[in-house]
Image 1: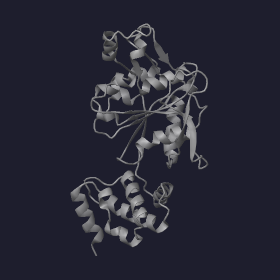
Image 2 (image 1 turned 30 degrees about the vertical axis):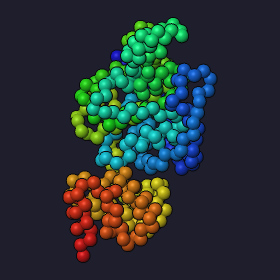
Image 3 (image 1 turned 135 degrees about the vertical axis):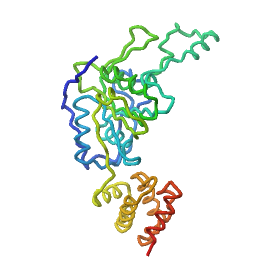
Image 4 (image 1 turned 60 degrees about the vertical axis):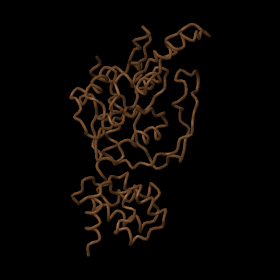
Length: 317
């Protein structure tokens, strides 16, 4: 097992403000083994505000070739980070959204034995029976295979803690070696070339801390905790970036957000809820002076007790 990855700083992530509103990026639904230039599709820009510590964590993960493990309050932008990285670098994004039934092997490939048997029973013999026709690569398998063909990708493994404890351990070798073989087809293997660290996939893993991840998995990751924006300027910039153009409304929303974050709530609103709420308030032209009464609070607070407590505190004279 490869215990050390070669440090490669040839790609330095520093997203600026001059990114175009959309750009052509490789279509992840296309055949990975396409010869020549792969099919492209137009992708819209992912608005994201990077802090210096977060940019440093991304560059550390990219340079060392390790997954970037993200933790933080729900709704602070862990999942969207992978989209922002992929867009900024012009790379295709593969996504693995983990469920309680997910298995590590699912991320590499799936073998459809049932369809193969069905085809055999129907005597479908247009060509020689090939097991490869019944192999479908998973998200991790696709980014490794794409690197095998000389192209880099970004991979999102979202909410890894939803799976059972064996899930992260089942991926240790593949994450170390960035290689895998298909058991049903002896000799059919994909690997990131050892002499091409510039092709290593950029892997982002999100964790909502529902379960404690195994130590062996944690040792193979770069860890970063994304905080809810603490400063008014940061939060104002994020709201503006996401289309909340009224300065008076942004100021009122930030005031309410600060007061809510200080309360003892069952579920404090995250950045995602705040953006939804502020966007709707602007869409219906809500006066800034009305924001403190928590109109349309159903988008912001997701527990009845929190709604009652917050309304009482914020409207108290």
